[in-house]
Image 1 (tube, helix red, strand yellow):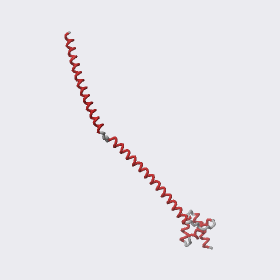
Image 2 (spheres, one colour):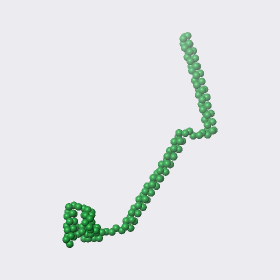
Image 3 (cartoon, helix red, strand yellow):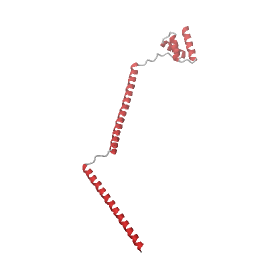
Image 4 (cartoon, helix red, strand yellow):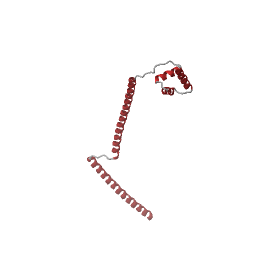
Amino acid sequence: MVDEQIMLDTVKRLFEAGIDEPTVISTLTEAGLTNEQALAVISRAKGTPVTAPQQIDVQTMRNEVSAQAAVQEMQQAQIHNRFDIHEQKIDEMSQKVDEVKQAVTSPSPLDPALSYRLSELEQKVAEVNAATSASLGILKQILETNRKILTELEAKK
């Protein structure tokens, strides 16, 4: 009884000194007590009734951990699926942009009939341009000749 009273007084003084419970438990176990005995001494020193340490159901913990792991796997799979969908959409958009870019930068192949008609049209435009230039040249010469005649007539007056 004296040893037990000394232990209770010592544990009370340790708590009054501000030492935490895990340190007190390790001190008591180093002194030769089992973990359960140390917990009993601490509970008597605190004045709380002695209760058996709670035993955690290992199977329940395993089930909870496996459920959490399954949830995390599903979340990761969902994230990967979303990334895959976005990657596909980005690839599709990239292909469409490349198609538009190619269509804009490269001339499209012309139909042979259209090409012939276009060359005929270009040839006619060139002929019209030549005729217009010739007419303009002739009109300038006529105008110059008329100016000379008028100048001579006015000089004779």
